[in-house]
Length: 96
Image (tube, one colour):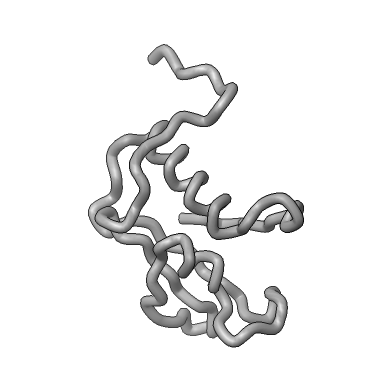
């Protein structure tokens, strides 16, 4: 579950690319993918006014799957839509 995401350098990085990299690096560290994939929630009141809150997730391969009771957008990335594992550059690989 993604609990927080914010692109503070949108002049350098596309948010959808950062999300894709984060999933790939997560898969490298935890290779077993949950059967139902990953989920995140987007509060449309906390994002810039757009036609579709969560657009950067959708561009990263996530699907809008509904709403929470509180009105948050629920997005999910299914295992078959995830990028392959990729190590984080410059991060030592754990030896356990």
